[in-house]
Length: 214
Length: 259
Image (tube, rainbow over all chains, first blue to last red; front, side, top):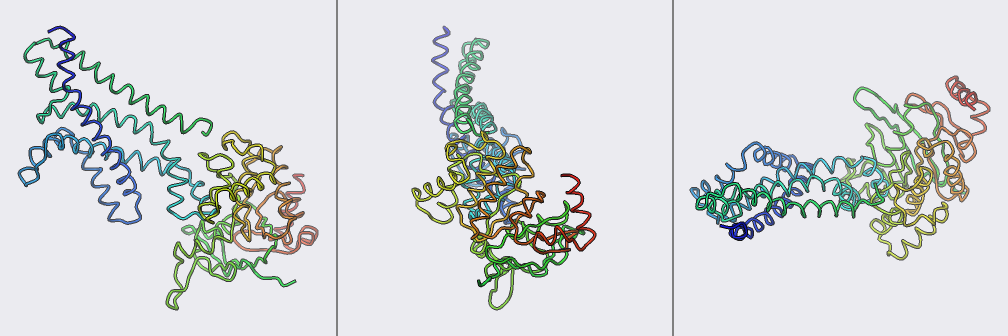
């Protein structure tokens, strides 16, 4: 196969990779906030649940989680498509790390900001949404930038639960052509080219939100 | 003139662990009265102010603001810790200017001043903007409305913070060492602004400061604090010229020597 042919054969998996990455990142983002706030909750039960989630997910392997969701859950009657399983596993995983980003950023906003907003008689909700969160969000961006790249790269694992993503295609073509070096070099480049604009995008947002302010 | 008590501390205690910072404070402040709190660092002045701003809760005792208990409310005839709703209601009478300004860095100067009137008082945006502009003009910063706090000097930041607190029209404003974090050459501009506000007269002030001349100049009453109790209080001239306690004499002489 020529390089161009290899490239096109590989790119058949691009859609799956991008779909899984997109939805997993979205899920991780939402979970990051829900669980991040959960860990700061005044209610002990919510704090406990959130902490357990973070510790369990962080303490176990993503690959095993993926297998567990796809192969073990059906045994207790919960079935889902490989795509769904991939998105959920990656999203849950990203959410656990992301919640730490949210939590640590919120508690890094200087206490004086809260005190000033109490002095101006903002309600607790207004303090969070209008004063604390906008400042914390800027601090979260570099962490979220890392996280979304981690998730993108993590999508390579879904090839192991039968999904035809980029890595899956690479393995299939490799088995029939044995052009290992060429195939995996192209594969590396493709992942890099997807990651690049994601990084730049986050940097752009960060710049937009901080110019002249910090 | 009928003088109503606006703020009343009743036997207020505050401890952090074993350390008792306030040891039974009784203090009343009349409407419009300017009270200066003086005393050595660590004497409990700032804590007293922070209790009033609801930033700290008293260990024992009550505070009344405009006839209502601040930290407590009566539910079914029993006195219990105030709910957030109750705090919100009573705290509207009080404003505060902090030593370290605490401007909101993600908002422009104008937004810093407009935000609370819109979100807390429910003012219309145009009205809040007009009011904010007038207040910023008063503190001499009308040309900085679109600037972010990071680009201001310390003195300018503190003047914005004063405008931000003033637009809420509190009945009493706490100034917690408003010039202590400033470079010496910037102190004057902030003191001038506070003097102007004091001369307008309507708003009460609880002023914590180490600027003795300034305190003597604007205060109706000076309260000398030491080790968590009020040791002496009275009109500024009386206290300055005729200190009764040895501690106040020592404290004042240290200032006189410094100047």
